[in-house]
Structures are given as C-alpha cells and as structure tokens.
Length: 549
Image 1 (cartoon, rainbow, N blue to C red):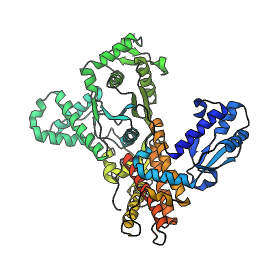
Image 2 (cartoon, one colour; image 1 turned 135 degrees about the vertical axis):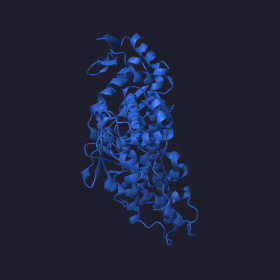
Image 3 (tube, helix red, strand yellow; image 1 turned 90 degrees about the vertical axis):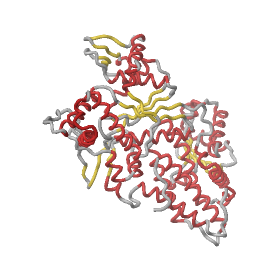
C-alpha cells in the first residue's frame, strides 16, 4: 500500500471503531484524492463519510464531521477541515508527498498495480468478431480498441486475459459470400451474369476474383461451391488480420463458429437446455424460453426447416468458453444488440454457468470531414474501411480517437482534426508531453552539477510538485476502476489531463537551475515520474512512444 491507501485504511478502521459500523457502510463512503488544481482549499483528500454516517446513525452530519476532525490522528495528515453540511477535507503533510514521490520512483509501474489483488480472474474478451465476408468497416475500430485496451489494463492489473475473435464462418452469410465470389470469378472469365441485389457488391471481391482466375484459370469453374466459400473466407480473414495488425491488435485466439457444429458442441449445449426445461416445440420449430429471463419474447433456436439460428451457436460458444476455464466473459457488441445482450445473459443463466458475462454495447461511429458527415453504403460496396482510416491518420491517432469517448455515446471521428500535427490533436499533445519529459531528462544528463537522480531526491520536493504527485497517484485507483466498470475511455481522458498538468507545471517552473541544484534535483525527479507515467499510459493504450517530434 502507498501512503494514501494506508491513511484510508486507518481512517476506515477509525470509523468502524468509533461509530460501530461495518464494512458495508464503509463501502458507501467516498475517500477521494482531490485532483482539481483549482480547488486547493478543499484539501488533498476528501470524504463524504459524515453524510453517510448521519443517515445510518440518525445524527447531525456536521457534528459527526467535527468529531472526526477532533479525534482522527495520522502522522501524514497536517489538518482536517469541515466544509458545508459535513464534508471532510484532509490536508497531507509535505513529508507525505516526499515519501510518495520516493515510492513512485522506486516502484515505477508496479506502484500502480493493486496491493492485494486476491485470486486473479481469468478473462475471455471477445471483440470485433466481424463476419469474414469482407474488410472491416470503420465502425469496427471502436469495439476493437475498447476490447484491446481493456485487455491490456486487466492484464496489467494482474488478471489472466485471452483476447478472442469469434469467426462467424457458418450460416447463410457464408453461402452468400460463396455465391458472390463465384459470380465475380465467372464475370472475370467473360460469363454474362449479374450479382443479385442481396449479394456482396464490394470491389474487394472483384479484386480477389481477378487474382484467383489468374492463379487457377478457367478450371476454377469446375470447382464445387465449397471451394469458393472456403477460399474467399480464408482470403477475407487474411485481410482482416492484416488490418488488425496495422491497428495494433493481436488476438490470442481465432475461434471458428463452424467448429461448434462440426464437433457436436451445438447439439450438446441444446441438450443441456432441454434437460433443464428451457426449450419447447411450437409450429415445428424449437424455441428458447427467453421471456423467463427478461427478454420481450421467446426466441427460435431451430427453425421449422431444421436450420439452426445464430443463437444456437452462441449457446455452444458460451458453454465452450466456460469449459476452457474462463471465469469472466466479456463481449463488445454494436448498440443495436441490446436485446441480444439480454438474451445472452438469459442463456448463461439457463445453462447454469458460474462465469460472469459482461456485454459492452458500442454506439455508432460517424466519420466527419470538412464539417460534413461522410455517407457510406455497405450494400453497394461504397464503404469506408478501417484500413482506410488507419492509412489516412495512422495507427496511434486512430486508436486514440476511437477510444476517446464513452462506449454508449455516439462518436464523431473528425478526420480534419485527426490529420493535424499540432497540439489541437490530443494524440500529438500527449506524445509531445512524453517527448518533452525525455528531452528534459536528456538535457539534465549533460549538467555536471546534477549527477544521477534517485529516490533520495524526493526530499527536495516542494509545494509546486504536490498536485502532479496526486494526479499521478490517482492513476492507480482509476486503473482499478476500469478493471471493474470497463470504462476504457477514462484512460484517454486521464492522459490528456496529465499532459495539461505537466505543460502548465513546466511553463511556471524552471526545472534545471544551476543556482538551485537541490530544487533542480527534486523537479527532475518529478519529470522522471511523469515520463514513466506517460509511458505506462501510452503502452496500455497501444500508442507508440516517439523519441522526438
């Protein structure tokens, strides 16, 4: 535990002892670091515990706050003030900041990991999972970055993480791909045939057909339909994998939906549901009693024609994940899958699975250029791909822009802003902050009066560094929060705020001053810790750390 965590622990124990309350009440109390530099008068730590205790004990909150102010003692608390109806503002001693600064320097990244994680969870994070029927469109970038960064954070925290892509290679969409690709090959060989309106019209199939006909010649027409389906699927997957690699996403597992049918896993999962009484027959079809789990209507699992719906595969897929040992299942889906998320949770309960299931619903992404929204049509083949976005603005900018908004809020991807290489672009602003810290430390290395900076230089920390220290320390709790609420956008917000704080600090404080060597050493220690924190955030975001800009 760091000093602030120790203060909180002592504070909570004090509350339990003095007021006779339990951990359930303590959990309702906030104990926050004040990271608003404009509100220094509100102290370094804030708590609403007196307000919470007033409801539990039937007492006046101001009286409770005054009692805490008088009786709670800690060597690292300089003073406690009561504000308003009973809010507590705690002020840390300068010695506390010095000890935190020394610990940050010594522990580096490990400072931000939980002090007591307990048993690590085993996460399966499934994201993107686009049909292998064409290139990834620009909307896939959002679920991709959310899943990828969440996996990075969970792994950093100490959990086991598997990033998984579910390949939807079974069902009608694959038959449509086979048909569309075959017709494109026939067209390349001079056969007068047109694509049906509901086929895949993208130019990518025309290009693939050209290459395929060049390789196989006219004999390709003798191939069975399975060839066209399998060949096109593999080529589409190669395209998808290449785009994701360019985007900085590398999956641990590529799981085939078709394999669930081939191995009998679908039949096995349906048998479990049937034995548990959650399937019934109606109109020649097999239904799942999804209304028993909050769905607005029961859902067909097997059509009257004997064809499985896509829900059947998902039942088996969820069962398979649990059998592979995953304790926590996470999926990213489009915003229009809200009812499907309810269905999946119902299936999890019906199967009796102990693993948790969390669905992250991602709102629409709109592309904006020249102040106007860009239109696209997947049916006609006129679409903006994720590869187009990456090629246009680069991996770093694409990742940050896709993440820099809460998942359930619509996102406008401003291409004009993304193309700028100025501080208006938040990616360059943050990367410049990282580069600047490196530049300062490099320059300091040439100054003989400074020597090597170490944790012992924390004794030179003063008031001007206090806010930065609090801001850096707050990253630990924020990462813990993200590991629980999955709000990955908070990390992008944080790193922008940290860059703002650093640039303000640097503009007001001379770091290297030969006439004040001790002060310089304290400030260089601060720059070192900022550099390490920027580096950690950029690593978790999957964004590069440039040497110069």
